[in-house]
Amino acid sequence: MIIAKLVVRRLAAAVVVLFVLSVITFALLALPEGGPERALLGNRPSTPEVLAAIRAKYLLNEPFLMQYWNWFTHAITGDFGTSITARQPVMTMIGQRFPITATLGFYALVLTVLIGIPAGLAAGLRRGKLVDKTITLVSLVFMSAPAFALALLLLYVFAVALNWFPVYGIGDLNHFTLPAIALALGQAAVLVRQTRAAALDIGGQDYITFARARGLGRSPIWGRYSLRNSALPVLTVAGLIAAGNLTGAVFVEQTFSLPGLGSLLVQAVGQKDIPLVQALVLLGGVVMILANLLVDVAYMIVDPRVRHATAA
Amino acid sequence: MTVTETRSTVRGGRRPKLAGGRLVTTISLAVLAIIVLVALTGHWMAPYDPTAQDVKLGSTSPSGAHWLGTDALGRDVLSRLMVATRIALLAPVLIALGTTVIGTSLGLLAGYRRGWPDAILMRLTDLMYALPGLLILIVIVGVAGSSYAVAIIALIVLGSPADIRVIRSLAMGQRELAYVDAARTLGLTNRRIMLRHLLPNLAPTVTANLLLSFVYALGALAGLSFLGIGLPAGTADWGLMIQENFKLLHVNPWASVAPAVLITITATAATVLGDAVFERLSAGKSVSQ
Image 1 (spheres, rainbow over the protein chains, first blue to last red):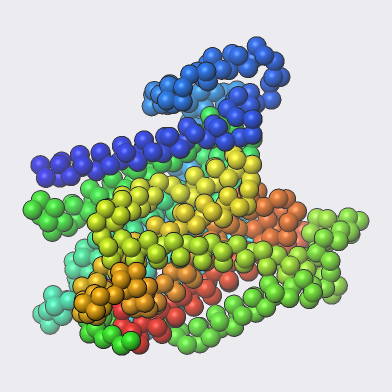
Image 2: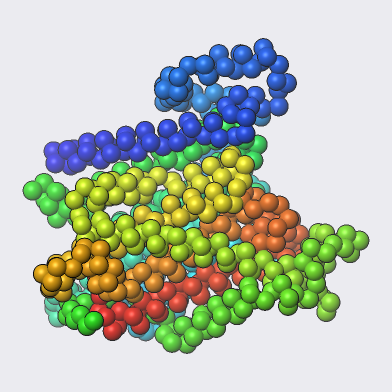
C-alpha cells in the first residue's frame, strides 16, 4: 500500500522529467542552420513543392505547441518518422541496433557488480592494509579516466599488442568482452568507493563487534551483516551507474566499432538526421528514468526502515 | 577564525584515506606541475612545428628524430601533443572555475537562506540529475554546428547541480552553529555572513569540488573531440588527436595511445590532489559531513 503510494509519486515525477526531455528533444529540430525545413529536407532538392510538402507533413505552418503535440502524440506510440538519410522508419533502425547495445550494457552491468562490490568490501574490511591501498588507488585511476581513453588503452594492449581479443566488429560474446570491461571499469570504481565507505561505516557498528564477540567467522559477518547493510549506499549510486553506462556506451561503441545505438547516435548527429537523433535521445532518457524508478523501489524493498520512515 | 566542531573529528570522516599517502600525492603534484609547464612553454619547446606536414613521410613509428613517431600527414606527434596541452587544459580550467563559482554561490544561497530560492533550486537540480546530461550535450553541440563555446557553457551548467547540492547541505549544517548566530546577533548582513564566515569554513569542499569539476570537464571535452564534436578538425588537441590517429593503431599506436595516457594521468593526478587538499584543509578546520 505504502509502496504503491510512493511509486505513484515517483511516477508523477518521472512524467515531469519525460515532458521536459521531450520538449528539449523536439526543439532539436530548430537547431540546424536553416531551421526545421532544412533539417528535414536532407539531401533532397529544395524545390518549393518538396518544401511545401514537408511544411504540411510536420505542420510547420502551425503554432509551436501544435507542432509539438503532433510530434509527441506520434512519438509516444513509437512513431518517430523516417530517417532523413536512410529513408527507413526510425524505429526499425533502432530495433536492429538495440540487441547489440543491450548485450553490451547488460554485460557491463554484470561486470560492474562482480568487480565493484567484492573489491569494495575487501578494501573496506581490511582498512589501511596493502589490499585496501591498492584497490583504492586503482579505483581512483579508473574513476578519473574517461571511458573512451580506457577503451582505447584496453583495445591497444589486449587486442592489438597481445592479440587476445578481436579488434573490432561483432560476433560471439568475445567481441563484447573488451568493450564491456571498458564500460564497466569506470562504474565499478564508483561502486568500489561507495561499497568501501559503507563497509567502513558498518565495520564500526556495535552489531559487527557483537557478532565477532559471539565468535562468528568472517563469511557470516560479511554475508549476513556487511553485504545487506551496505546495500543502501550502494543503491544510491545505482542511478549514477545507469547514467554512466548510457553515455559510456556511446564512446565505447565508437571505439570498438560496435554497430549499436551509441554509434548510431554519433552517426545521426554527424549527418544531422534529426528524427533519428530525437528518437535515440528520448529512448536514452526513458531508460534512465526507468532505472531511477527501479532504484527507488529497490531501496524500499531492501531497507524496511525507508518504508517506515516514508510512511510516517 | 577558529571554529571547532568535535563531531567530525570523532567520526574521522568517510572519505577514504589516500592510497599510498604522501608519496602518491607528491607524484601527482609533480605530474601536474610538469603538465602545466608544458602547457605554458610547449609552443617554444616543441621540437617541430606542430602543423608542418610531411605527406611523403606519412605515419611512422617512434624513432630518434620523432620520439613518438608521426601521424598520417607526417606531423610530429610529440610536438602536437605538447602544443595541444594548452588548449586541453585551458577549457577544463575555465569550466571548473565557472562551475565552482556558480555551484558555491547558489549552494550557499540555498543552504543559508532556505525558503523559495532553495525550493526552486532543489527541483531544478533534481530534474538535471534525472536527465541524461552528457547525451543531450553531445546532441546539442553536434547538431547546432559544433561550437566549442557552447560546449564550455553547457558543461558549466551540467556540472553545477552536484556542487550546489554539496555546498547546500554543508551550509545548512553550518547555519545552525553558534558562530553564525553570533554573527547575526552582531548585526552583520547575510551577504557578509555567507562570504566572510561560511565560505572560509567550506574551503576544503570548494577546493575539492574545483578539482573534481576539472577532471569531469577534461574527460567530457576530450570525449566530445573524440566524437568529432566541438573543436574544428585539425586543431592540436588531445581528444582530437585520439580521433584522428585512431586508425593508425597498427602503424603508429603512440599517436593515439599517448594522448589517451596523458588524459588519464592528468585526470588521476587532479583527483588525487583534490582528495589530498580536502584532507589537509579539513584536518585544521574539521568541517565534514
